[in-house]
Image 1: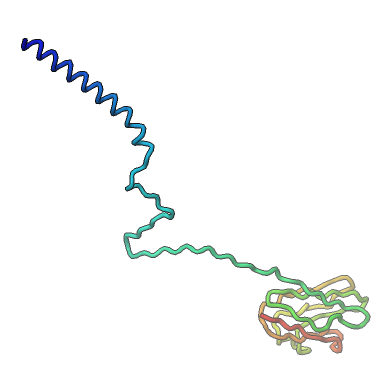
Image 2: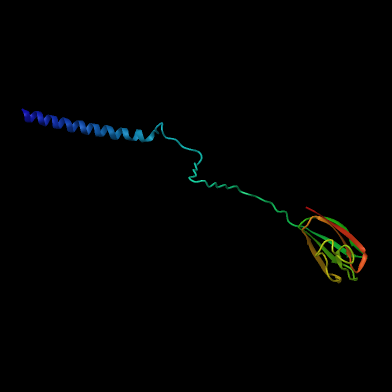
Amino acid sequence: MKKALLIFIIVAGIIAAVAAFKNKTAIAPEQTESPTASASISPSPTVSVTDNTTATVSPTVSITPKSQTMIINFANGTATPNIVTIKAGDTVKFVNSNSTLHWPASGVHPTHQICPGFDALHGLNNGESYSFKFNEAKTCPWHDHLNPSIKGQIVINP
C-alpha cells in the first residue's frame, strides 16, 4: 500500500508540475505584451560632465556679402561717375574709353598720400583699366594725374 501511495504522490506531483508549466507558458505572452509601470522613455539625451571642462557647441552662420565693383569710366574728357559710395572691401575699377591717357590716383595731386596704394602708377591707354580694393572706411579724393582737373571722390562706408 505504501508503494501505491508513493506512486500516487509521484504521479500527482508530475501532473501538478505539467499543469503549472502549461499555465506559466500561457501567461508568459500576456506579460511581455504589457509594459510595467516602472518603464520610462526619455525624450532627450542626458549628458554628464565628470570634470571641470565645459564644452559648448553653437552653430555659427555668418553671411559675408559679396564685394562689389564700381566702375568709373573716362570718356569725352570726364570721368563718370566722379563721386561713388561703396562699402569697405569693395573695388573701384577705372576704365579708359578715351584715346587720351588717364592716370587715376589718390588725392591730393601730386603726392597721392590720402589713400596709400591707390595709384595706377602710369597712364592707362584706351581700353585699359585699373582696379583698387578699398578696405578702410574713409573718404578718398582722387584725380587724373595727367589731367588734374578731372577729379572726384570715393566714399568708403564700413
